[in-house]
Length: 524
Ligand code: G3I
Image (cartoon, rainbow, N blue to C red):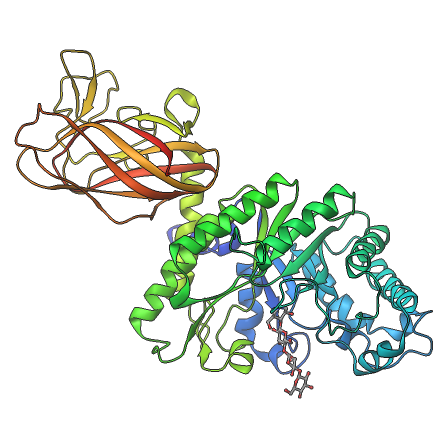
């Protein structure tokens, strides 16, 4: 083989390697997947693509079912209050943990205490147990399982789905229903787990808790209050697992941003978040594999990843399945499916591209340099000329190479005009041009943008706003007022901004328009 061919192969493989999800994931976060129950045994073991996609794309792993009590302890032990390792299928614990270690992956343990997938013998016996006996059994089980895998599991879901679907309070009808104080039982389970493996991060995990809600009788509100109380009482909880099983056509931008708000709240309590069971299913009469649905799904995946992995408070994200070929959804959710990023033949779907695009966007905006070296604080004011430093295509897009204005301090081709009173205005804008700004938003919420001193002469101009490369609001129109020198103010209402450091982009869809500055403040 000649040297050019060798170089080409190195280059191509280098490119392919560089493009996998895990290689694009932010340094301090993981991108994980479940491993199907049949993975370590036949028949899935023979599906080479299943294995190779997991190894090449992901750096986090969790068992879909094999760490649950029904699978770890299907047979009634001799003495449930004095368990030994013989009572537990340690083989399942070993297979996943060792696979994770061999492949340098974060391993999640899912889950210790859950009302579902419990062995039948436990459902029957526990009805007769006293509160004390239930504590004793849970302590034995947790101590044994967590102690056995000590040092190998980075995150444990200690309690799963403890909040009732209907009442939004702690569940009744569980195998642990006979405990006299359910919250105290949950607290003790965290204490047992911490003792058994002091280094693992301990999570409360649940579904439909991710969207922020003011309503006091909501699951979200209950969860936030519960974990805040646990923290205040020094219960060893480290984080909240937001499952995020979502539906393609119901997932509005507002809901995505409200997940950001929940993560803000959890962070402010001093806890971490993990996105533990992410998928976006397509339901009912929609043609699940139509181009349109797959494109919508791509956009939803894209926005979710951008928001979630771009958030400081998140440790990582786990996809609850990566291929439509092996999915829990059609078995459990009637008329739904196609929820994952690979299709039934292991081909990447548009959603896979969406995930990658967002990961790349996160890398890009973390690299660009803010003007004046620090992000602009929001609420606050952005002068349009203070766009970020960075090479062309990173912080601004100006169609031509010359500055058509008379203000040339920035030494780049963006068209800036200095008015006689000293004000600097952005002008000569054209469709397709844009400017970006690094902002630091104090709280997630809806903001008004007061665009101060703007003008359009004869045609409607139009601008759209993007956060971290994703369009977040409809386009705003500037009505012409007949003269460039007659400036007026416009207001863009209710623009959702997530907390933290982000890239805000003003994209000119129709020009020209002259712009001076924008004051950004919380909407009333
Ligand atoms: O193992 C038996 C097999 O022996 C039997 O032949 C077969 C017949 O249906 O069933 C097999 O068990 C199934 C098991 O998955 C393993 O495939 C159960 O019926 C089935 O109910 C079970 O579903 C799992 C479900 O949890 C149980 O609630 C799904 O795979 C799993 O993806 C799902 O995961 C849960 C999370 O743990 C918690 N959050 C929600 C999430 C989705 O429901």
